[in-house]
Image 1 (cartoon, rainbow, N blue to C red):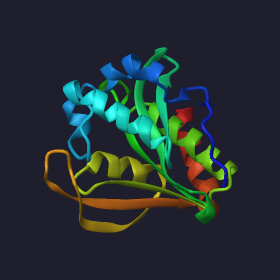
Image 2: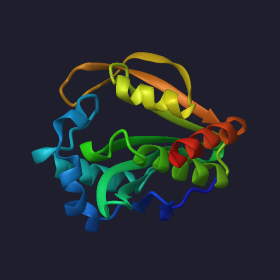
Image 3: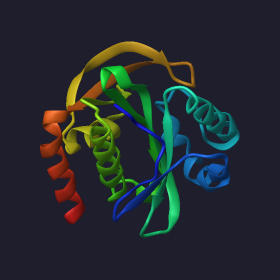
Length: 191
């Protein structure tokens, strides 16, 4: 599997590999405490620069962060990333996903997932993973709706930035499942 930082794009979104030049563009989309409720790091208000630096630093290891542009609005509406890239295991996780309020429950998330999954499987992935907090029902619903399979819960797995212990729910899509999942995403985007 060979994932490289590259622009990913379709009719709805443009995902640009995150760089320093995106900092001030992304800041307003991140400035919503509700986004960060279940996360291990905070990225709103005074926490944004530390979060942004952490994402940039992780790109030196096993992460490719993307800034999400919504084409219909011509503006930055969020962030998503490839995490825990494991080339020899042909496995990658998609995470650190958030969208500004105006982009939630829109074409943005299915379009981003379509671009990210297409690219991952084209690069040789056999498994794409997703995870979310046990109390984050909105994210779990989105993962289920897109056709990812729920695999289980790791109880009390991590600390949130608020110091609470968080259960983590895992989902995945395997290469043989991707055509059906992809078709479902395309149907949602055609509505």
